[in-house]
Image: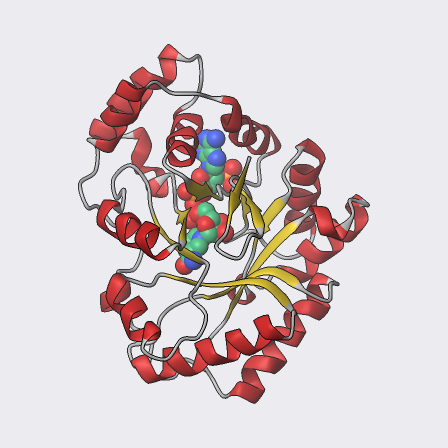
Length: 279
Ligand SMILES: NC(=O)c1ccc[n+]([C@@H]2O[C@H](COP(=O)([O-])OP(=O)(O)OC[C@H]3O[C@@H](n4cnc5c(N)ncnc54)[C@H](OP(=O)(O)O)[C@@H]3O)[C@@H](O)[C@H]2O)c1
């Protein structure tokens, strides 16, 4: 199942997250296993420091490069020269000459810096070194500031999104701007197994002989949200991927929507410590 981005590029709705997957054997074997069970979308970042192992696993999988969707993220806002060097470093580590999606990892508190970084992203896009460009952790106001100077709109915004923070207003806004929404932290740092979330999601999971994570990923995809669960455990990697075949009822989807409590378990982008320059 793919999401068609605003420029027509197809992005698999489910991918493998790799935050906190250690470079070396762990990242290499995790990615290789995910590819062997059918994942064709890997989410990494310069900050995760595992691009080298991700790249090696992709190469060793022998799957044609064009069949795998690779996302990576710009580490920090900086001068154009430094950002280009960082981008080239990502390409070298990933052993590729393009990435499918390149994201600004975090907004800066200074809108001019975000605008300058975005102009560099637009250049990469025009040079065809990236098939799509986007942002991460951008709120509506970060986006409207970006639009003051942007020539190309971001195609994706990757944000914290799970049943405790379903991001309804942001998603509505992104839909109206033609920007795809991608979820990170779908398991709410374990919170989805507890309290009201564990109770409701557990019941729905039981109805389908499925697991709570599978229910969450199916709910996300039913809302047109791209999901990138992370796991280094082979059985969970397989379990998570199978969620693409799980169909929830309308009532169940509404029950999960009702679990929204505006609960953040990651940094709030409006109150982050990043900036003005982070590099
Ligand atoms: N843009 C950003 O700022 C940002 C921030 C955070 C994350 N991300 C991206 O989003 C991805 C996903 O988010 P995340 O890694 O924070 O969290 P996550 O996917 O919500 O959760 C990962 C944790 O859940 C466990 N887990 C995975 N599948 C499970 C299952 N089926 N049953 C029980 N436990 C399971 C994993 O354990 P094991 O690994 O031990 O199996 C791991 O501890 C990241 O890897 C990264 O690619 C982006």
